[in-house]
Image 1 (spheres, rainbow, N blue to C red):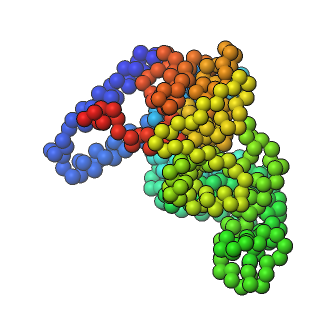
Image 2 (tube, rainbow, N blue to C red):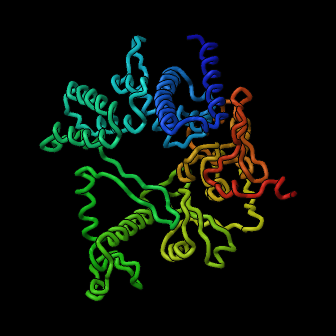
Length: 454
């Protein structure tokens, strides 16, 4: 099918959707409405197949840099206005359900051919596909390929006539039948499954940790927790918490924390000792340490929160307490002017003070859509160091490694009214936002100029 025919087909699809939106459906019976919903659902289930083919082609041939981004994920995040999680899901699905190409250029079918075919026919919905892919992903690596293929065909058959819940139960039963004795000890399988994830910060400031430790990690951590998570150790309620030696009987007797709370406090003590040891060296131009920025007004009033280099919020009470026993960078700014000191340098590397100013001003990579926090960002010269750019605070900004390199491909990065803007090349400009609001969501809530004037 030529590009003109594809464009015409999309136009017909949009026209049909517009016609449906104009209908009131008052003349339909209840049964006809239910049937209509079923037809709409079938069409909706089939559409991801088109996206899988498009993403597979982009992944195979396209250059993300030419499309104005550092990766295909960034292209889709910005152009389709999707979350990073949703984009990762779609790319992952396209890898399993989209067409492939062999090294010699020979076209190949999808990895999960039965699932892809059923989805293309509208027999499987997104929930069915997720269940089947999750089942296959959880199968141990030692399972025979023929067993995997037969299992997929079985689940596709079940899912084509049943709901996701029934499919989930059948998948659990099938997994037990395949692996009746439990997983075999296997280094490759354990290495594949290991992970540790720090979840997003919740509204109350807490963050959830999830993960799976391999045997070596557990064996390494166990003796540390045996020491630091013992009753009476590292207790923040003590006037002088015990972080070495043996706690006193009084410290042990008055320790009312649960084991989970003691483990939490032990983690803080271990991390604090490592940060203060100086053995971590530098990262992106600063010693590896805690970086917090706040305002003078909030600090004096002991209220509000500081912002860390990782983009998390640190309540003022915690910040003040940390300042009494920890070595970290604290940058304080005037809340009313929000002006940083002008720090001009003619050296290639930005000074530590300038980097702290960027932590306060930018908080992370300034390329729209990028989630990399300040700890993971580099200093980008907006004027181009190769063009005799200087390391002045109004000529530098934070950018992650990929976006730092991308900025040299036709993008214009400048500072306007204290906010960093990224202007794309004309051929890539589709009216997308110029500012990264992910690190400054409060800017989205600020009144616009026309509202202020009104």
